[in-house]
Image (tube, rainbow, N blue to C red; front, top):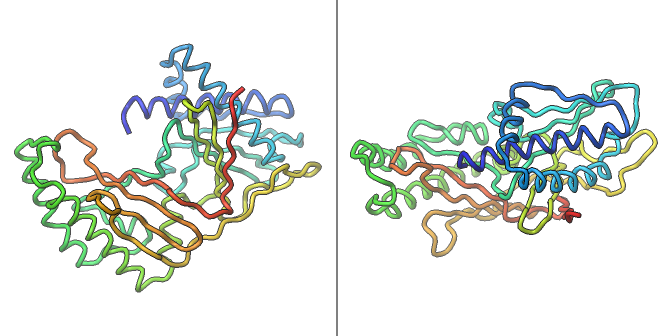
Length: 317
């Protein structure tokens, strides 16, 4: 993710936090936890132009009003103070993709929001000569077969790094890098899947996080804010004491088997993963730097979802 995109993402977190605070405050006591993540987001917000700020405010308001319909516990007036906070980046490394938490401590209840500004990527995970993706993604260390298959690729990249080769000028990147690396990636997942039946469910929990959440995506060109419900453990959409949710969010089941994992036809840098239940992901591998380095990054996107994951398009007013 570029510095500009990262900055815009943090600014969007900030305005969503402020909008939540303002709108919730019309119904009940609410407070913002002003941690270091809050300060970073606040600074990012200060760098936007007035025009961009107005755009972000409209986008965040469309989402917040809809979230109230889905989560009546947010605005019911209890004898407590509702807490809002932006999570630390380290939480993402621990498998928690939620950017904003909405918490009521007295009833031991919380929900989380994952915020995206004009992009749909799920994760940007890396492959390298030392990074054990199997251990990190689904808790099973990569086999010796995998390390044997990828070693020539990373050795080649390390040699080209020493030459200060630009990635665009790298000779034979498809045959020497993309294809063998992705083939080793495919073979390793299939290998572990044959021995461990929970690899599909663990993969999805890694990609989407171990906590339920709403994903909020601002699509500025369409003047729409999209909300997706990831209710994998049944913690979202709980009724309040006096008010029920106006829209019912079903529980989505985790996958139990891999149907297919293979290259996209006519592409050397992208593979697609199909699992039962409607789960589908694409993995596009690319170099994140201008110069060659012995590590590559995935752009991982969800391209198919179970019907139980509800998508709501909130049009801007």
